[in-house]
Length: 444
Ligand SMILES: Nc1ncnc2c1ncn2[C@@H]1O[C@H](COP(=O)(O)OP(=O)(O)OP(=O)(O)O)[C@@H](O)[C@H]1O
Ligand SMILES: [Mg+2]
Image 1: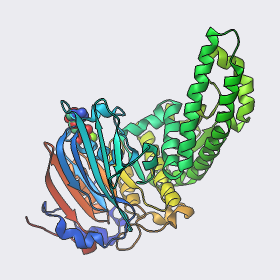
Image 2 (image 1 turned 60 degrees about the vertical axis):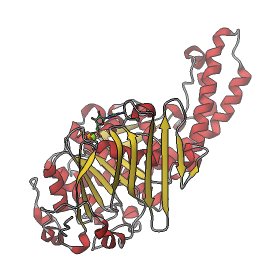
Image 3 (image 1 turned 90 degrees about the vertical axis):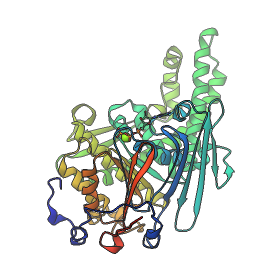
Image 4 (image 1 turned 180 degrees about the vertical axis):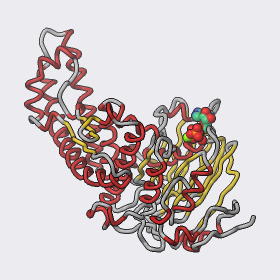
């Protein structure tokens, strides 16, 4: 164990002694114990063809804790990415679809079976070189990809998230937009319309140089389109961040009881209505040839003990912040949608010290639920351990180290499946249905 105080773990967890296990590819035998666990939305299986490193690959997950292990480059992150594709219609690694088709192949196909208490959803996605992406829900093609967003609530925590802190303001706007769009369809719609109108307005500003005077009528048309859309986006982002601060601070202090953190939403619309900002910045916009006022300039300021996290936070502190932020988002989405989001954890342990890893595992196991923000601790249960105290839904985690995975197995009091990958194949599956309170051995 990585330097942890065992006394803080529930007795049942220690008794379970799940440090050794046998392997099985026949997982059906676990069906009964796993299926009885009430659950929010979870991914039951995915099948990918010619997606990144996989020619053809199928994997089945359980509603609880799934650990993907394997050496560097074995394809662990790519499987998380496949689940992400099926939720968000895009990769969280590489936004260019074409580059996610297996080298030398034409078409990538991803299929996923997602289950909730009341329904099952079959999601299909394919993309090929030179044509548009096709997305289907239960055999029916979507008219717009945006219509799919929110059906499968999902939160990813990965090394890529570092850009939320270290990247430009567009990364923090993307963060807010990704979350809000999952529970507010009007937001996504308004955001897309705002961005379109902004493109048009910028084009009018660019064209000014070839004219004697600005095309004021066109500018006015786009201003009028943008103003109500920006007001909506502004109000939603403001409310979202207001609601998120308390859970974020709570999770941060659960992970490491050291520094104070804060988040501030910064928007020009805080000071003046957009109509006024447009009027004031007209000359500047004409000179710059783009729109310098609006919600596309919003940002978030993150502070650690009153110092900017981006400049003064260590890598571990920044990572801890991102984890706390995403956990807060997960519970927030749960409250907004009434469904537990799937949680994807990619390479989460790098840069965290042993104490933080232990506390993270305790949080995911629901051990600190009594400390969760009041408004979030009362959310309905999804899958739960026998004490019924886990507020998290399905979790899929990757790690190269079997040692880390063994630690998780012994610490988490929810059902666990370990899936080991090598050469584009599953070489081992081991299940730990916690309802048995001890390891169940299955022989092929
Ligand atoms: N379009 C593609 N075609 C073929 N192979 C690809 C494509 N895109 C990525 N790959 C390969 O997929 C492999 C697996 O990548 P992945 O990031 O999933 O590995 P990983 O198991 O997460 O590794 P690590 O432990 O280093 O994070 C890599 O070897 C990568 O080169
Ligand atoms: Mg990886």
